[in-house]
Image 1 (cartoon, chains in turn orange, cyan):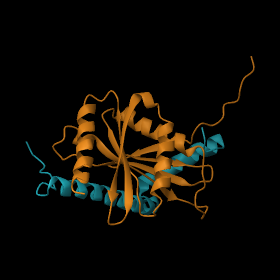
Image 2 (tube, helix red, strand yellow; image 1 turned 135 degrees about the vertical axis):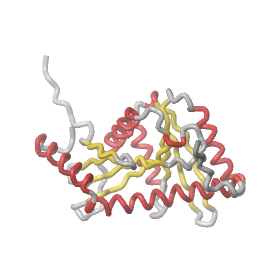
Image 3 (cartoon, rainbow over the protein chains, first blue to last red; image 1 turned 90 degrees about the vertical axis):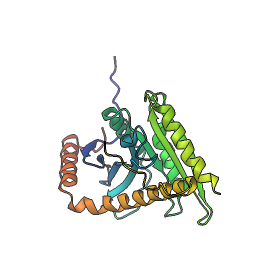
Image 4 (cartoon, each protein chain N blue to C red; image 1 turned 180 degrees about the horizontal axis):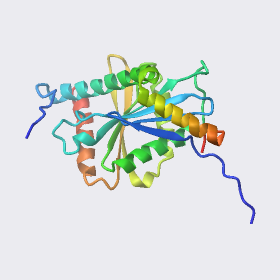
Length: 173
Length: 64
C-alpha cells in the first residue's frame, strides 16, 4: 500500500479565552488573525432565554508584518470554520450573529468571504438564518446571519426572535 | 432575582430594532480597533502568539 502525503488542511490556532472568547491564528506569511466571540446579550433583550449564549463573531487582522494587504489564502476559510466548530464544542447552546460591516463599502466582498467560511462547516449539524437590512440614508445593505446548532433545544425561539428583530426593523421603513 | 431591563424598552419596536442593529455594528467596529491595539499590549495575546510561534517552529510550517 502506498502512503499518500496529506496536504495541510488549515492553520494551527490557539484559544486565548477571556470575556471575548478570543482565538488566534497565524498564516504562512506571519499575518496574525484574531477571532472573537463577543458576548451580545442585548440582541433579543436581556430576558431572552439564551441571552447569555449570544455572541457576535468578529474577525480581524491583529498584526500584518508584510505591510501589504493580505491576499487570498486558501487555508483561512477552513481555519475560521474549525475555530467556530471548536467554540461550539465548548458551548453547544451558542448563538452566533455575524454582521457584515460596510465601513469600507465592501460589504458584498465581506459577505462572500463569510459564505466561504461557512461552506467549510459540517453544515448538517448547524442551522443558519440569513437576512439583511437596508439603511436608506446611507444606501447600504447590512447582511447578517445567525448560526446555531441544530441540536439547540431553543432553536425555534432563536429563529423567531431573529425574524422578529428583522421584521421590526423593516416595519418602520 | 435581579432583572435587567431592556436598554431600549422605551422605544417603539422599530426604533428598538434600529438601535440594536446600530449597536451591533458599533460594537463590531470597536472590537476590530481593539484587536489591533491589544496585540501590542495584552500579555495573554503575546503569550498565545509565542505559543503559536513555538509550535510553528517545531513543525516548520503554520499549517497543520
